[in-house]
Image 1 (cartoon, one colour):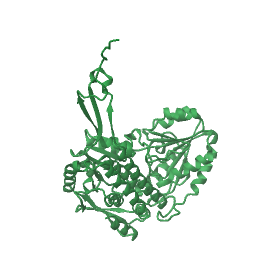
Image 2: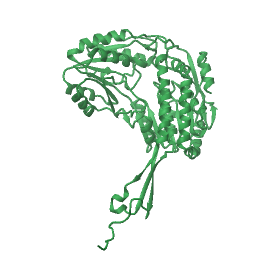
Image 3: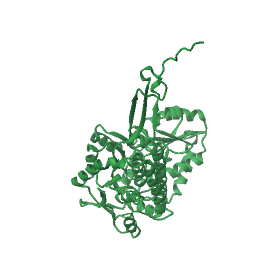
Image 4: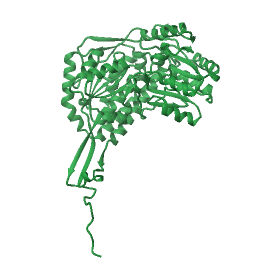
Length: 500
């Protein structure tokens, strides 16, 4: 299947992204067509999962979960290491697929595939590290003459629901970690990236993943809701909007959840920062993938003493970005996911302008391609400040006092990640303690992530941490063994007296 997908992408033909259910590629449901946002034509086609498909997939997953759990961690690790090499071998062709299906520039698409390979390698390493504990039960009188052991057992059937903005790497995280943990996994692809999802699943299958370990279904929210509510599913990993995350939680009921939801990331530039370097980084990271990242630079708070200098440097850096065909190596900014998303950037920029902000650049679109937009000094109640824009727009806002800017950052309902440019260790520690976010990037913008470091948020940004080691905690359950009357710790409360 992988070669079929890549050949179609190479030839710019419509890509058939089939479902993978009970060990077979196919699907007879109504076709969903994905319109490439830059090409404005159909680039991929996938069968919508029917009620019968879903029932078959759930039954198969439940029946095969025990078989997958029997596969030794070393075997899982070897498969994941092979998948890492396979992704690297097909890097450029997979990147082209991303560019076609999502309008993501080739340079960003190649980076995402590099991260897929890295993520699989990390998952392999974590599969080898899964362990348990010998608990200190004999440290309390009630536990004397007992031994208690634990190990982390597979949860059983996992459900991975992935978003469109980084469909390859986020699927690698969810599916790779779930397999590393010993689960069988149901994958529900994003409607905007069915072929990319099928390609990642194919990479794993061609690398030796047993067909019992994964199934792929395509469809919209109704398919996801049915899967979330299924009794066969033990744990759900979802990445997407806060509203959809709430719907997932309601449908799931009493299941284990890892939710990585929206963001409205702030970056603070202090008066001691390297202004030119901060401006360059914020410009680069504010518009990568057209700002379609939950940690994309959206709000930049700059100390008023350097506000004009920063804004000039930031504008110059944005002007140097190349907007155009995502299949061109020189392109920095391609299309957004669709025209509605691009229109949101235009609409919110106009709203901010009516509220007194200055639109320095952008505020326009060509189809689904939004011009990189700079909004200077919007009021605190403007949509570009309050809500997640998830697009090619950055708001630059002056501040006077460090305590006050921390409060401004925390005013958001989201709390995923923040950036801070300063060399003052007191400010760094204060921000780390007081900012209501899951991660703080110092002397970098909010949009920075390493795939083996815990990633996740607080408030409406969700809960759980999406990195292989921490996901494996979510994908496994602790099982305890109690050995009564048998102790490795020593069972005597006193030693016998000896004759002197």
